[in-house]
Image (cartoon, rainbow, N blue to C red; front, side, top):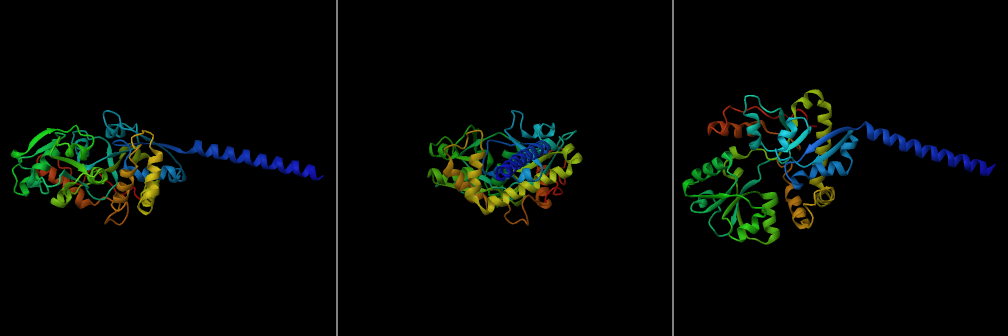
Length: 333
């Protein structure tokens, strides 16, 4: 009798395990598939997304999220075409997508970082610690009209002469090393990665931020953009995605070291291998800037958004006035 009861108990346990397994399998099949396209190789701008994936936040919201690399024609076109529901872009580069007779169907739905953390990095002591200091120096450029107009604008504001700046193509992959080797005098960087990398590599550099020089240049970069058709047909799924993403960034703020480890573990490109010191230092710096002075992660300030697009219009860098266009806070938790 005891043996029979043990057999019955064992059979019950096996049945229960199989049932549980089939329930989990069904749940996995029921998850809504989402494609999230990066703007570049994985880095600490993206940490909250990798955290949300690793800790199951997306799955808790009923989502199966695949993080992919951008194609040659860019993340925005992939998102606008519907191949990805979400992608990473920036307010400045979004302008080209919006400034068309038939604008691309994308909307910025979250600010990954609250303020513009980009600026000009140069060798310490070369006198480029202000925009005017670029006079007579060499600057590595991507030859973007917005980029060059921003450089000219801040130089002029500071009493400098843009015509005295020598422009060379920007083919740099390691900015501090290029500066140390005198390949260039100045380069545009995002401080949370390249500026921190200068510290890690022990290259003494000067730096100034566009946001500190001119408030109208404190635009949003990077942002999460979403496909407009997807937002229209699946608003609750979009909200679920951003709820999980917000939890991921909140975790990264509270636990920068652990979040950095999750980013490294989640990287399938191999691009972060051997860069652990940079990633930990960058994560520590950026964790204080994901939300910064906003009341919550992801929110886009309408006045700052419009100030930058107003500046683009004023300087005839867009054919249309884009103020009030291209963003929404309506999907944030």
